[in-house]
Length: 205
Ligand SMILES: Cc1cc2nc3c(=O)[nH]c(=O)nc-3n(C[C@H](O)[C@H](O)[C@H](O)COP(=O)(O)O)c2cc1C
Image 1 (tube, rainbow, N blue to C red):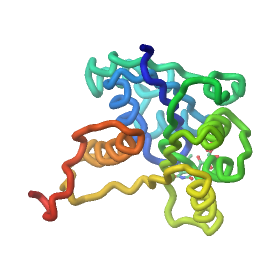
Image 2 (image 1 turned 180 degrees about the horizontal axis):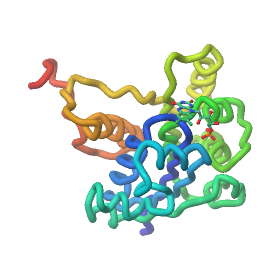
Image 3 (image 1 turned 120 degrees about the horizontal axis):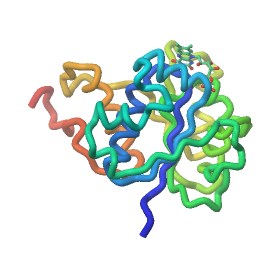
């Protein structure tokens, strides 16, 4: 049986740490990740995580930060301009997609079915094939058009999972916050994990 294939997109909204933690957790589970990064997503990786985390160096970056377990999976990088890539077609056996983080621009493109680039097209494929699409928007405050675009995506079948880490697990580091968001994304994609404690009814118990 071939490895599960999941598409991940990184766009130009703040929160690159959420993206790399999600990638590492998927790969540690043996997933074949099909990654597409927008131009501003590339800039985000470098601006927020440094020169070691540019797209070209992403696999070594993941291994050095999260350990060799990431080598259990595979990473294929697609150009955002390649509308002929595998994930642009519903006939390709990619079972789900997460867009983390998702900019308001890409959110708008998905909400209106524009398919202007591979991120938007692959998301549209998930919606038309009734497969799981997890959108992780980040912006604050939110404009009315962005709020309406989230509703449109939810109505079309996407899960809108805002980048809103919780604090009941008493995070000490930025990585703790990223663990929480990556855990939420993994759950939405159908994976078990122990990235944050389940709520027991009391903080810190
Ligand atoms: C450093 C930086 C941070 C940004 N943060 C956000 C953000 O949190 N949310 C957002 O919607 N756009 C943000 N933007 C703006 C988007 O990157 C911009 O709208 C871009 O055109 C999005 O394109 P993309 O969706 O193709 O990546 C940011 C831009 C920069 C340069």
